[in-house]
Amino acid sequence: MRRRGELLAVAVLLAGLWAAPPALAQEPTAADKLFDQGLAGMLKGSFESGCPALAESYRLDPRAGGLFTLAECEAGWGRVASAVAHYREYLGLFERMNAMQKLKQKGRDKMAEKQIKELGPQVPQLTLTLPAAVPEGVTVNREGVVVPPASRGVALPVDPGRHRIEVSIPGRGARVQEVEIAKGEHKSVELRLPARRLAGEPAEGGAEQAGPEKLRGPSHRRTWALAAGSLGVVGLATGIIAGATSIEKKAVAGDNCPNTICNAEGHRANRTASALSALAGAGLAIGVAGFAGAAALWLTAPPAETGTKEPTTARRGLSLLATPAEGGAMVGLGGRW
Image 1 (tube, rainbow, N blue to C red):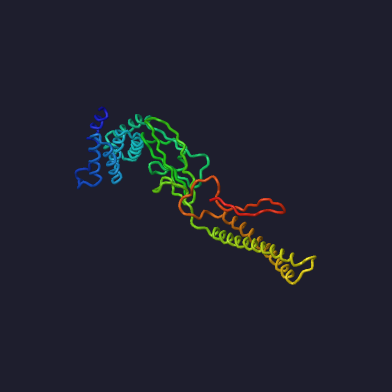
Image 2: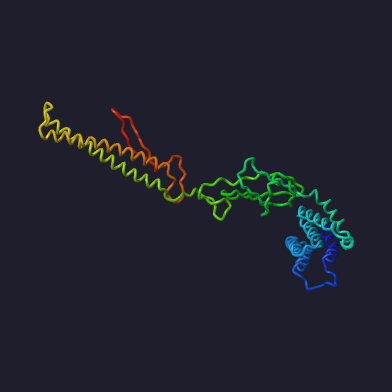
């Protein structure tokens, strides 16, 4: 009630301060109408509507009276930091007035000084800090207003209540935190950075919610891996068939070459066996090389599927398997899908 009475007491002074001299009276401007609307809301205690109207009136027509009235409204609303800032701005304007203009203010400078002294201790101080190592291009804003690097780590006056802080990093999106602070409170908050994102993942806090890792389109390496794998299959098949046929021909040659003396059939079987043995060796070599190349291309290629990547602890793909065996080794192809 005391504050309401004080507002009523200054209402006449405020209205007189704003009004134009009679000789210059004109049709009310938008700034005039907003001032009247804001003053009426302020006197009724409707600060949520009255103070924004006064702020817009001062923006359209920056008169000292409008600024002082806005400070009074904000003080009544509990926006102590904004009120103190506007009282100080008013005193700055007052200092630049001539003697006649100062006289017309009717002591409002003293009222502003008194308000600053009373409200100053109630102004909360908020310190925003970032981790020691931050990427290039990081930006911080509070209620949509950028906090410059020089102001980070510095106690700044803020109005009591809840504040929305957003930290943005190019390529990593933004992260939003909300901070509650009371009158006269001093609070320090270390801001959290946006999480690192994988390629194709939407930014946190954007229109699309962050989800599982999105995979890229087809890879040329996987196309070549399939081609190399196909060549490996043909090579191994050729080697196996040629090797088996070579063994059969050697058996025929053995039947037709008693005591190392071969008849015509034995000679033909020996020649065929030798050729098939060479072909089998070449086929097996091509097969092993093809599978090894396919495995290498497949495992080093970026994901080719579309959709979302399922979590897994084991890596998918082809692998070349070698098992020791008597007289050599057995070579094969394995995979995980």
